[in-house]
Length: 145
Image (cartoon, rainbow, N blue to C red; front, side):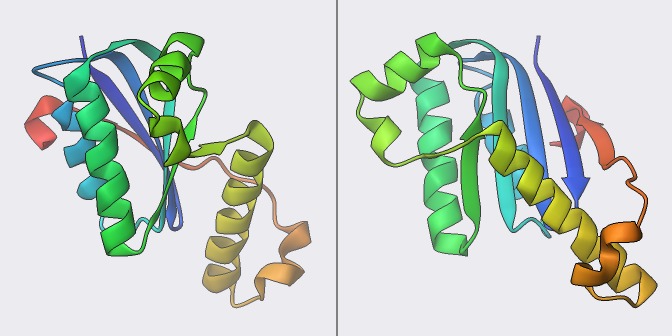
C-alpha cells in the first residue's frame, strides 16, 4: 500500500513516503512533489520505504532533474541502509543531497519564522518569542494525483 504524507511550512515541504517505490506506484511520489507549486525545498523522507526498484530510482532521478530545472532544492532524508547501498551501487548517491535531522530542523525553523514574520508584520530575526505551531500536514491520496 502507498502512503504519502506532506508536511508544509512556508516554502519547505517534507514528503513522507511509506511503502514500496516500485511499479506501478513509484511515479505517484513525483506527481505529489511536482504538484506542490509553492515549494522551494522538497525533502523526501524515505524512512518508511520498504523496497525500491528501477522505477523508484527513475522517480528519484526525475525529481532531481525537476529540481535542477525548476530552481528548487531536493534533499533525501532518513534513507534506509539498503536503499543507501543501492544509491551507492548505481552511483546516484553522488547527485543527491542528504538532509540530516539537524538540517531538517533548521529548514523548518527558518521557514516557520519566515511565515510567522510575514503574517505578524515582524521580521524573521525578531521572531524568537513567537510560539511554535505545528506545520500543516495532509495526506496525499491516489484521487488527488
